[in-house]
Image (cartoon, rainbow, N blue to C red):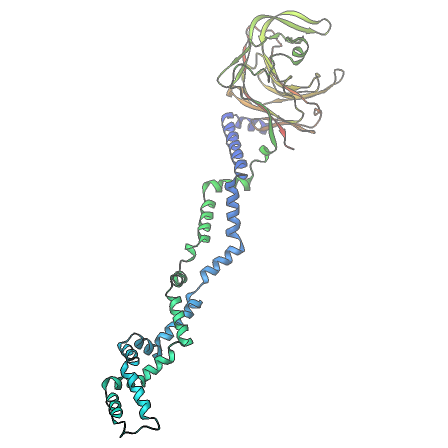
Length: 470
């Protein structure tokens, strides 16, 4: 164990801060995953695709580059004004509703004009005689000299009336009237106002979508999401999925998860037992207590009766001077490969051997995720082979001040490698003797030396196991 690693472990002794960072990262990860598949983000992506598309840019340019002077509306209005400025149209509309034209039209259908035309036709006929038809001639002369008919014929021969008659019913006048109707329509005026509006794009639906997109893009929620997507701090989290856990929020221990004895004692005897090298007796729950959200394994100096395994005699009733506790997932949970971790606090580690260990059905292979030694230090290691040839790798860990309270102990186990971590600091990597069988978890307190007093506690806040995602 080099000095630099010990220094890193001392720096990482603030387990609470590490766990807060972990929890914050996990929360961000869950929110990130949830948001990644949300309809809200899908709508944002669709909106982004819309406003960043070439079609959007083309449409915006088209809207912004529109000009009233370049439009057909402008041409129509220009033509209409040209009509209005021309002298013949001025004359036409001056006469159209004038009293002159009204009088002329009334005279045109009057009895006087009718009689005048009859007499005019008679007088200019081949057989007309002033002597014999003097009365008709005098009547004709009198009508011709009347002020009404003089004005009538004068108006009829005027340039203004001829202009009026030329336009009345003409294609040119129809064109003018059509333009007048078009220009005076609400649709024309609305389109004209739109084309004259310098801020027409800002009033468009595209602009509203653009503003919504920019607002969302600059919001804290989306900034955080895309920053996380870019940095991708979730690579480690995303590798694993939870396969087993206990937060110890309920009391007593969940029987479907834990047994309080060695697995083979549970399996063969339905009773606990202890090994020949151990001085303590694992009781059936009497040495297990609880706090608000943790389980406490306790070791005490007291006389307790139990069974001890003797290779030559079998299970022998024995009186022990010490009591202790063990919990195991031997019946509920086993896993080959994965990540196995627990948040643990040790009390009086020099009195007992606190162990977080893993084993399969046989004694070997065996992994110590950690074990406290008599000097209060920690040891990690793995053991493999058989009873005739035991292979092992053990490493003492320096830099962990157990008086600081909780630490997070972790083993990452792959097909070819074992990695031990304490508070996320790698303390050992081993590629030899890697187990290839499913293993289960054990937490125990063993007493291997006589001592006048024992009062030790093994406090477990939580246990979490993960398997690699496929």
